[in-house]
Amino acid sequence: MSDGDPVVRFARAAVTVAGRTVWSGVDVVVRPGEFVAVLGPNGGGKSTMIKAILGLIPLSAGTLTVLGGPPRARNSSIGYVPQRRSFDSEVRIRGVDLVRLGLTGARWGAPLPGARRFSARARAEAHRVEKVIELVGASRYAGRPIGELSGGEQQRLLIAEALAARPRLLLLDEPLESLDLPNQAAVAALVAKIGRAEDVAVVMVAHDINPILGYVDEVIYLAGGHAAEGPPHEVITDATLSQLYGTPVEVLATSTGRLVVVGATEEASYSDHRHHP
Image (tube, rainbow, N blue to C red; front, side):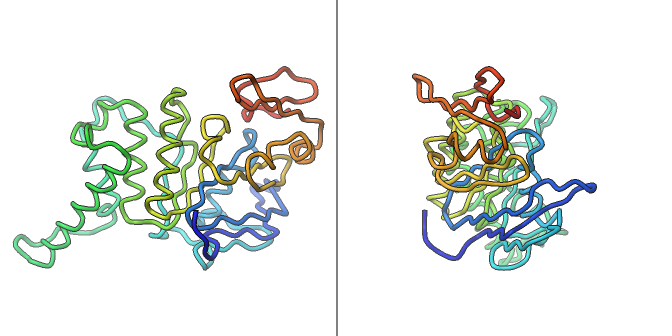
């Protein structure tokens, strides 16, 4: 994690969608190189926070600064991997070509054959694509059709695509969904490594803190229309979550070190962020 001006800053922020306040009074700061997880129950506004950062949803109150200015759509300094999308087995585009779209997907036309300036650019782009594929550990299978790859392999290549243009902020909306536990931990470790290697701030929406607990610097927990931010051991506590939910909540630690969030009247669940207490 590195010092520096905030990459993202919410100040007394609120969002209203279809007449309903999703969250309000949110004060959140994300700094360069930080790995931040956005947690909370379904409907708590996690994806809404990502959309606000992307400039797709306006605030109804407060302020939001992204990379030193107001949020705006199609910010080239932001890499974004939306909620899980899978590729059918019939999809024949190679992984390396998918990653290359992160650099060239918005470009019109094609370079002129033999033009030296385009040739130099093409070589630089090829080097960058190779570097990010290596960074996410996908070199062995990047030449294969994306539809033939496993969910974890596809997710690594989607992250590489988002990194191709050298973003300063990487937004990941539920990248662990539908992955098995070993792949969840592997992707979390990968994201932490990317933050250090590229000095990029990472904001990841997740349902469960456990696969990523050993990797995140900060968590933003959204519940009851409000947010709490800080290191995991300070936010995921009985007192903090009880205040957010407005009802007694207990945080248990299992013998294996997993955290379980339990409501006053419900049984413990390992899928602790999928349900309101």
